[in-house]
Amino acid sequence: MSKTLYSKNDLSSKLKLSVSTIDNKIKDGELKYYKIGKSVRFDDDMITEFLRNQTGNKVVNGVQNEKS
Image (cartoon, rainbow, N blue to C red):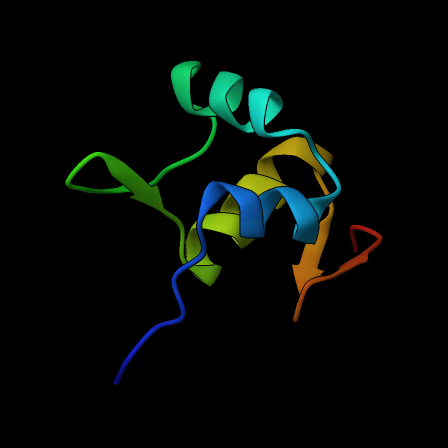
């Protein structure tokens, strides 16, 4: 089963965050990533976990729902 991997630019567009903010979240350990050579990549699970930790809300299919 293959996973979709996103670059920093992909993630920046997807989350409406600047690349420098993504860099800061990586540096602070708030955003997990794969290191591939000199590049970093993110999968959907890493993005979902990051959003859950940032918002405290449940995220389903990229959509935030209020906590039950």
